[in-house]
Length: 320
Image (cartoon, rainbow, N blue to C red; front, side, top):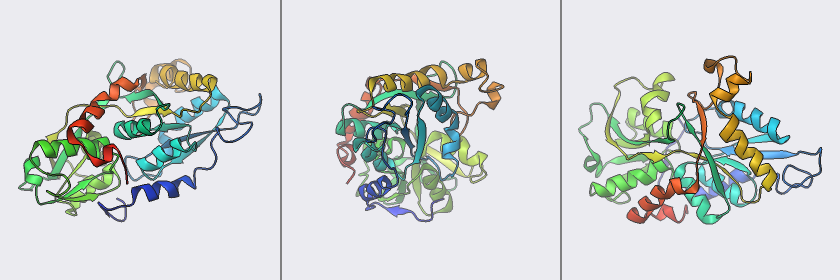
């Protein structure tokens, strides 16, 4: 778990600006690099993601995709483990990031700031599946809280102001239950899905929210959470899957190579057929091992925009 649980007044944008100092120059800024350079000078492609749990192995979970991108584009992929969603949004807007894994909500926020940002793919666990997941409302197993109405007056862990399953959908859920998400609870931003879950398990928060996989499998597999330690008191509607998106200033030829890499090659079938993996079990796609990526477009995220329209959440227009 992160060392501290940040209160709701956390300076998210400030963290984003600090994170950008570590991003370096993107291919868009450097002459001779991938987006506008000379032949034989492929340069650097900056790929950013936000960890869903406190982990030093985020880059490892993307290593197969990184290797594919380097092979197909001829660029060196510089992976950025971003501090939060705001850092990725600001980094792409500022031309510091070329490709990013967004959360669905953070993608919509980024698209609002730069309409040229394009979603291209999202991960699925099994072939033929639709990209999507759910938000869970959770409490300790012995808690007297049994629904979202019961969150009223309690310390509640959210994940991040730009998190879809850790803030936006929970906000809508609370409002539907008659609870003001700002004044009806004592909100805390944990900073990560794992941190939110573990804060509830440890009693730092009376209740909280997280993506489904963190509660169902990831923290149990890692031994940080015991089966039955928490109870799920609310599940959201299905949320569209987290998209890989490309910055607006990536050159068309390079853009197409990135799209093709994710939608045609970054899946277990291709990787095993072409000898990249010796078997499906050996393929590493995502932290839990998934089948791969499928194409997505902007229309998939209209449901996020509808939730924003309903909730009128401040975070739908600003992270400040």
